[in-house]
Each structure stands twice: as structure tokens, then as C-alpha cells.
Length: 399
Image 1 (cartoon, rainbow, N blue to C red):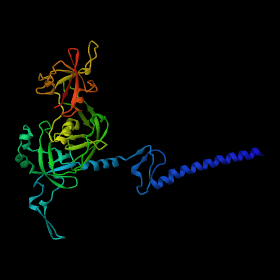
Image 2: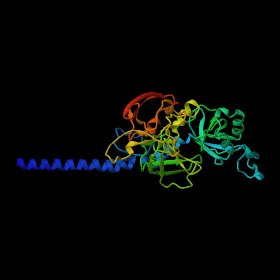
Image 3: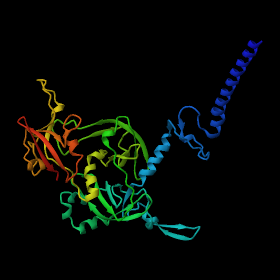
Image 4: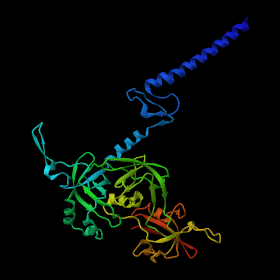
């Protein structure tokens, strides 16, 4: 008899437990999910949550944010750093219809008091909160000034050019251009300044962290957007390289000639590249060191050593002799050491092998030009080099 009661109790517990578990699963998967649109199991899609539910998610393990939500976040954050450049009195309207009569209010509106937001002739990207902007503004007068030192360009000349243009920011404020800076090496962009103190500044991406296949977003002042990804990313493959020049190439998927004059960002909202008027992709690494120095000092300079070299670790010796370092070597113009350079001042010679900079060995992963790009004008570094098999060291200051 006791055995029968025992069996009945066991079955009751089993079916009771089964029914309880089934009820919890049913309730959480159907009732809870229907009310709040949140799955009990798997990933949580933030884009599907009813935002009026008052739900708080604690210690989430894997939350999926819809792509369009992320893109909108990035566009909202970077949009304030993109400005439009407009030519004065160039509204692209029919001169015969320069007056617009609103019959409902009997007001006459002079169309010349307004500016069509998509009639910009160029655009720019904010570099500093106090008004410096890098722009693709093209003006024939710039070509005559590029070979001059900015200190030699008269304020009258700058004012004459700047008076022809103005800037409109994302919040639709108009600003006069009060200064222009032109650099001969960044020949497809100019620096413009407006009198403002609170512009939004977006950081530059670390290009070394960009990977093939990474999703990127491109946009422009006109606010059109296209998604792309990194198709290929290559570092400098030149045999004879320059210590002060890093040549990096990148190509994007879905890139064509219509995608010009835009700015490319990663999903962190950091600037990755400019696409200029010539349909060329310019990585921020091409001139980020110059821009960073310019942002602080209002002049363009970067750390420079002034040598041409061969990375020995990129070679294979027929005698199985492995060697690291940068062998100072003549380029196609017969120049190994540039005139008036730091290298000439410290008397480096063709045939010297630069082994390290501040303890960082020069090898296949740390090329000489990449190491130097991490320093600024005025920084002092210790250079270790080999001459005739004898190691030497010297402390130098980049100028």
C-alpha cells in the first residue's frame, strides 16, 4: 500500500514540475514577448523594444542594436562637424523671379535674403572648436599662393579671397571667413577660419586598427549617406622609402565616381578618410600629424628625420643572414640624406643602419616612417644606429 502512495506522489511531483516549467516558458516566450517585444532567449534587438514599457535591462550579455539605429546615432554625432562653404550672391535662382509674392499674407520676400542649403560650392570638416576647418574649397587664386609662405601672404590678399565666401554650420548659422591657411603639401584642401568658440570636434580613427571588411559610413554636407566596407587595405610597399612619408592605400566596396566630396567614418563615429574632388580616397593618416600640429600651433609642421631607406627585414638574404633596421639608401633621385634635415645635422650617412628610435626596434612591424609619425615637432628621441658594424647612439630633437 505504501508503495502505491509513493508512486502516486512521484508522478504528482513530476507532472506538477512539468506543468510549472511549461507555464513559465509559455508565459515568458509568448505573453511577455507580446507585451514588450523582447525575446526571453537569445539576442535582444534594441530596435524592437517598446520604449514606453519602462523596461530596464541589467547585466545584458548580448544586445543587438539594429544597423539603422546605429547609423542614425553616428550621423547625428558627426553631422555637427560638417559645414557648407557658400559663394556670396550665388544662390542659383532665376534672376527674373527674384521676388516671391505670398498672396496669403501679402508679404514680398526678397529671395536674395535666403540661401539654398544645397547650393554649396564646397564643404568642410571641423578641426578645432575655435573655428579652424579643413575644406575642399577650390579657387584659382589659391594656386598662386601655395608656393608662398603663409607669413608672406598679406592680410589684404586673404581678406579679398575670404570676402567671396561664407560658412554655414549644421545648425544653420552663417559665419564670415576671417582667415585662410594654405599648405603646399596638402594641395587638395585648404584651412579656413571662422570666429566661433564651440564647434563640435570629431576624433580621427587609428588607421592601424582598420580591418578588411570593416563597415564604414560616408556622408556629406548634403546629408546623403552610403554604406561601404573596406575592400582592401595596404601599407607602404615601396622598396626605397622616405622616413617622413607614409604611403597607405585603401579601397572601398560600392565606390564609384558619384561618391566624391564626402567624409568616411567608422562605427565609433571617428573620421577615417576624405574623398576629394579627384575621386581619390585620402586617409586621415596622410596628413593627421600635420593637422594635429596645426590645430595647436596654427602652422603646419610634422616631425621629420630626412632620410631615404630600405627596410632590411623586408628582404631575404641569399646567405641566410637575418638583419633588422633601416638601411639609409639613395632614392631614384640619388638622395639618401635630405639637405638641412635633422639627419644631415647629426651627420648620418648613406649605408648607416638605423636600429631603433627611443627603444623601439625598426623591423617589419615597426617601419621607420611609422615610428617617426608618432612624434611631434620639438620631441627629443634617442636614435641607435650601426655604422661599419659598430653601434652608436645620439639624442636628437625633431624640427
